[in-house]
Amino acid sequence: MSSSSTLSRPLSALAQHVATGLRQTPKALSSMYFYDDAGSRLFQQIMALPEYYPTRAEFAIFEEHGAAIAAALRPAGNGPFALVELGAGDGSKTKVLLREFLRADADFTYAPVDISAGAMTGLVDGLKQEMPGLRVAPVVSDYATALRQLGSRPGSKGVLFLGSNIGNFAPADRLSFLRQLAAPLAPADRLLIGFDLQKDPRRIRAAYDDSQGVTAAFNLNLLTRLNRELDADFDLASWQHFTDYNPLSGAVRSYLVSTRAQQVRIPALDETFQFTAWEVIHTENSYKFTLPQIEELAAQVGLRVVDTFTDADADFADVVMAAQE
Image (cartoon, rainbow, N blue to C red; front, side, top):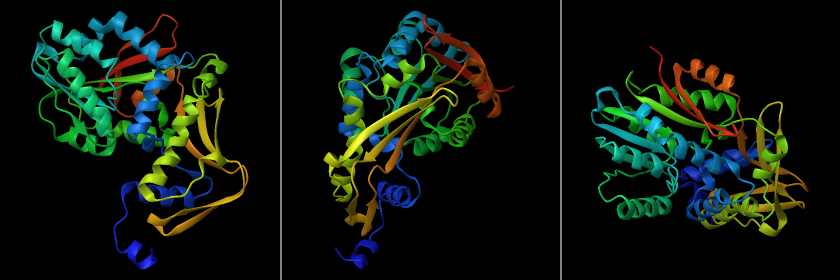
């Protein structure tokens, strides 16, 4: 493929991101692109791993406090509202809340948002079977698009951002994202965010480097996606997964490590990238929080904490927020 023919066609969002990420030092790619259909399936497996406590902890919160959380999310006067979930995945935890809303005869529409069309199809099909009376308005998009749509959505809304996804943002990006999330919220609207709390550093690290190698496969699948969608020639046998946790910053950082000096050709960019032996591509952050940090974070973006729900071991917190009055 010639340079002129490649450049004559507009680059996809993924190609643009890869071009920027692999030209910088150190090289980095966003964890947002983990979630193609294969990546979404691998993440479902991760959530069932014995080391991966966040899903079980948040599920326990919903099981114990589901009615109270549902009540905290409903608008005053119990009028109609939309329940918008960013990054819905398989909806396993959310189904607990949905059943609470249905049990309370709430007038609502569930609007799940996910970047993976495959994951969305599975979720919607499952909901039709399990909750035939539920109104569902699925949206397949990235967070940026979903946030723009959120601002134009009429009526009251409760917004869900579960599963400690907020921890994937670097601090400055986190503030920017939360400001965008807070901007369209009316005083009666509510926002529920899941936060993974700081705890034994060894438990945290093990959750991101499991003994079965599923997390490694999840990280490496990003290269498989680039090979498939951008015609790249990453040799997966020459890459490995590595992760570490810094208890001072509260950050888990995951990397893809080049195990030898190599070059990777990406025809979609008409470019070849050089990697030295043991050079890394930073692929994911996963920050852990304390409750005072969550209060401070909310205040910085014009939100206030309304309710906080934790599991029995205080591993995880689901925090209901509203716009500052």
